[in-house]
Length: 581
Image 1 (cartoon, rainbow, N blue to C red):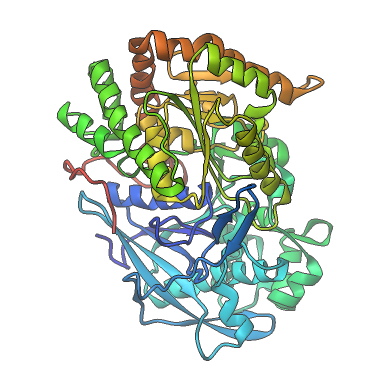
Image 2: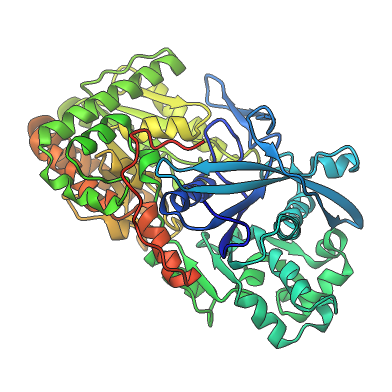
């Protein structure tokens, strides 16, 4: 248990996946943030989280029979979910108005006894103007002005709240992506002692840099938040905008939130080895390290596998690296645990869709945010070839899930493409698309499918974590060699690679051909004809990938390389649920 006077890490993230029923996350970035905070609780690491309350959530997804997506607000109430309002309130200046901000406290309690408080900032107060009450309404909603105003509440309001609550000894303000980088200007105001940011010296800036670290998750320039300087002046005010200008964070009269974070951070990292390399190319002259993402093992390991690992005495919750001893688990026990997880998934599918899938069929899972670069429809480049594979190499069924952002027409088109392919393949290959992909559904899919398919367009996968969750449950990946899979892939041992078509006349066609070849010649024959061999690949996925690509290894690297803290894995054996409250 931490006290507010104890040196701690303040972890700022635009979205945080706290629980499946609390819609304060949109996808991998938020779920990673939640896994990081859960892991900190397991390790007893002094950390506090800061995000926004998002009373309208991200959105609820509705799909019609043709795959057309519509959305409705995912309204929730912090009080109804048991969050406690903290006593302190702070004020943030937005668009020339004083906006009052309160916070709700959600406490992550680890089964091993640690706890991490997370503060959700909320502007829905009667004393605020209507447009200001809505600032903490929708996650990734509204226009650019709305987004920048939210980021001002997160950065300036978050620092003000921590001070109001008595958090004085923060060893690192960790910016999880650039959305929270305005916190650096709040710190600059502190270190100048009220002189004003325009008087800041190099020494002042270095004092802020000594207190900040930054993780970038975006491998393409267009993915970094950028705002015209005129908009920054309107939302943030002339004083703050002038500070941005003198600190060199507004190239080409544009406020680039990543440039701001880079300017004010002593340590910067990408989220996979390859992503670190790409980031150094995007930002020449910057010192950018890499710490490959990991997932919270107890959260993402299905109950049959938790019980299996417990029976073999791995003490894996205390030290996730002990999952390497899965190599001693008999293959038939791996397969039995997977059969239980698969049955649970197919029960969920039946409840959600009314369609009962066959537990004996080879089941492929693809559950990601629906957007163009992830190419969820790549599997359907050649439907005749896919029919032939299912008829000759072994029957298939496919489970899809994933939301497209309301403004992402390409992502919505991809969902419609999958529905159209499902209609054309009806009678040959059952295909279901599950609405409202969220954490509980992700746990079920990651554990219950037989193969995890991942098809991003290289090099756009910064890391990816869904395949890591699958690996904890003995589900191997068939994936493009990008992100974490470059590090986790051992051909035929932990899973299989999709051949890279970059530089060819038709990369997608070549990569789809590679998927078909792997399924037809390698994966399906092994699954149906040599199930013991397939079981060994499943076991290797746990022992090699699950034991390494987890939150404990990730956060221990952050502690050593980014935070300058000494943390040891010393917690006692935990209960079986792995749940937090």
